[in-house]
Length: 469
Picture 1 (cartoon, rainbow, N blue to C red):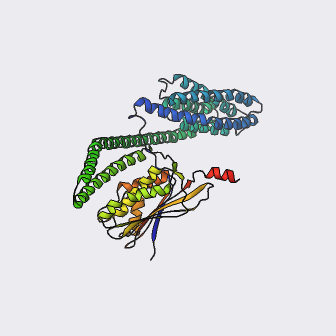
Picture 2: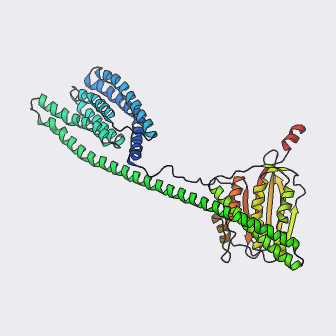
Picture 3: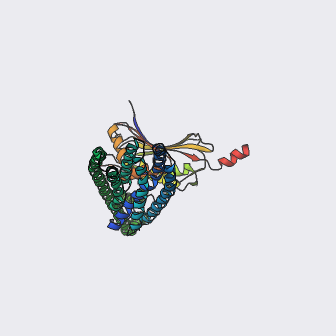
């Protein structure tokens, strides 16, 4: 009969998403918008410089002298200063303290745009017949760049766009007037400029609306993160309060039950009182699981490997369930391979917690037969390590493929309305933290086998390796 199996390997736990600030006020929204604008402007400097070098080279041919190179020599420090100014703006926005007024930056943008437009005037009035075409292309590129990088601030956008539009309309009009109005064809570029401005306004509005929609989406996402953080904090506080409220009476209940069991005369009374004490231990384990699950979700659980004897660990775990197995007339078996090393380095407390949860589920869902814990080793690919494997096998009803998928997909399995609950979910997360593999094999009517396998250092192995060498 085929055996269905599911293996869960090492995976990173999803980080807890925390809200970083309260609902944003207009000042913070402005800082976010200006920061995006400054980043675009800073990263765009080198592209603008490269394109201006190309235009200057073409202008030299159109004008017939090296005057455009003088213009380029003046433009280079202007672009570098522009980059420094917007880097400063970006630094201020990173501190959520954007400048209240941008008049200095606006004046600088106007000056830079006017200076850049000088090359367009040079080519427009050059003797080269295609100079006007190159000038038009340059001005259209300047408009597109301004709309793309400065749209976050309408003041800065206008500071760059209006002078460029002034060149687009002023150059053909000036050319027509200087020719004493004798050639109306010289006004044709005005029609093209009007069409482009009309389309450009629609494009600029679309870009602004897209930015506003993105800002609304980011705001909604931030509010969801804040809600999730608040819910997580409330859950953690509830769990902590519940533990504080229940820990003292639970310890008193367990202590009283142990005292009564020692004082009981009849075997039947001792058996019933023992069941009461065991129920208290189970409740205490559930409270511990709740706390561990909360700490795991918050990334507050760490693994602390220490030298320990894995054989004693297995004996202690199996011995803790003797009473529970006897109450259900189940047999408990422990098989330890003779090649298991005497001392290995692992977090005994966390391994014991995983084994407790697995054996508790095995005992809970087994009505006849027994539960067997096997401890064995295999060679490891890492020097000084051994592959340690714990396997818990039961003779219960077993699980189907879909039930196994629920176990490892959601940390629970439905079996007549019940399930392993928190213990298995915690075990899977602890296994990931320990770089372990938690697996299961099961078939309906054939029982289940849960395994915990991981590589651990052998205590003193490095010393023996060095002495052997």
